Amino acid sequence: MKLRRIRCLLLIVILGLSVSLSSGCDMCTEEEADVIPSPDGKHTVRIILTNCGATVSYGTAIELYRGDEKSNDHVGTLFISPSRGAGSKAAWKDNNHLFIRYSSEADVTEMVVELDGVKVEYEVD
Image 1 (cartoon, helix red, strand yellow):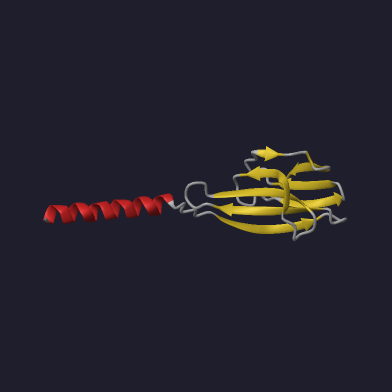
Image 2 (cartoon, helix red, strand yellow):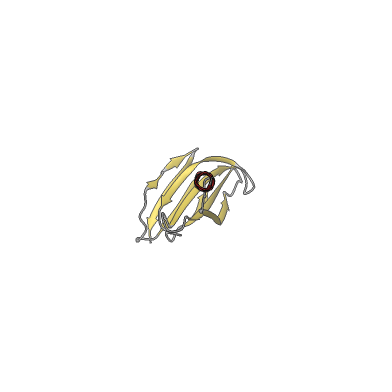
């Protein structure tokens, strides 16, 4: 009887752990560091900073959206760096040209030069 009770408790503990581990303990946080609408309001760029704790600590993404700063019409990602901030700054030169500056210390993994009619220029700071 005692052995049966111990087995039952062990089973409950194992099931509890497996449920909590498989429930997607997503420790990542995202912070919208900047939102920059184009002069004509047809596109918006968002600089997103991520923090995922000890595994993949930081990251920076620059995302392009159609519409104003309230739009959720995501077009795509223009820039990715697994560095927080990466010293990234973005500015519109005109309605269809975006300028992105980033730190020379940033490890850049993606740089798109044109997306949805928006041409992108990059400069290392």
